[in-house]
Image 1 (cartoon, rainbow, N blue to C red):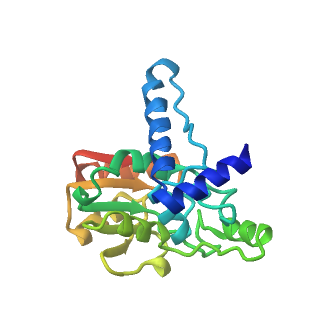
Image 2 (image 1 turned 45 degrees about the vertical axis):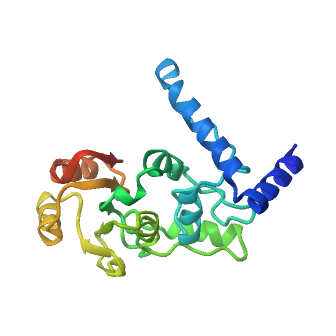
Image 3 (image 1 turned 180 degrees about the horizontal axis):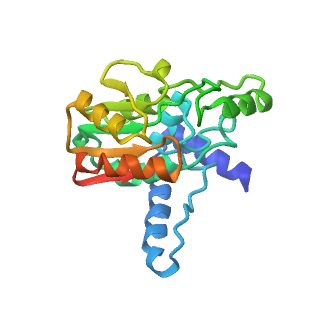
Length: 226
C-alpha cells in the first residue's frame, strides 16, 4: 500500500502539480472539523506521507517545527507539530488579505536563555548526519513567504536573535513583564493584527501576561494562537 501511495503521489505531482493529494487533504480536514461537535476531540486525519500542504512545504524549507514531514528525507520528521495544516485550513483562501502578523518567540540558540532550541539541535544532529539545525527566525520567514502582503513582527527575550529583513521587524520583549510587553507595542506602533501567535516561553504566567497586555492589538475577526 505504501508503494502504491508513493507512486500515486509522484504521478500526481508530475502530472497534476499535486492537486489531487491537496484536495484529499482538504476533504480530510473538513471531515475532521465537521465531526468536532460530536467527538469533542479534534484530530488531524491527514496522512502526511501523501499530503503536503503549501505551508508545510514552506515550514520545512525554513526549518521550523510547525509543519509535518514534507518528504521521506525531511530532517524534522520526528519533531513536527502539524500546526501548519490548521493555519492552512484557516488562511489558504485569503493569504493576500492578511496584512499584520505577530509572533512571540523567534527561537534562541543560546543555552543560557530559558526555552532555547539547544535540545532540538542536539537531537537533530544525533539522528541525522546531514540534519540542518534550527536557526532563529525561521517561523517569521515562513509567515513572510506565505502571506505576501503582510508585515511580520517578531518578539524575543534574546536580543541576539533579533533581525530586520524584507517585511520582517523584530524587537526585544520579556513576555513575563507587563512593562516590557507594553514597551514592545510602543516600538511596533501597529494594531489590528490579523494573526497573533504565542510560541514563546510556554508557561502560564508568560502566556497570561502577554495576553492581558496584547489582546487589544488583535483586530475584530483576527486569530490568536497559543
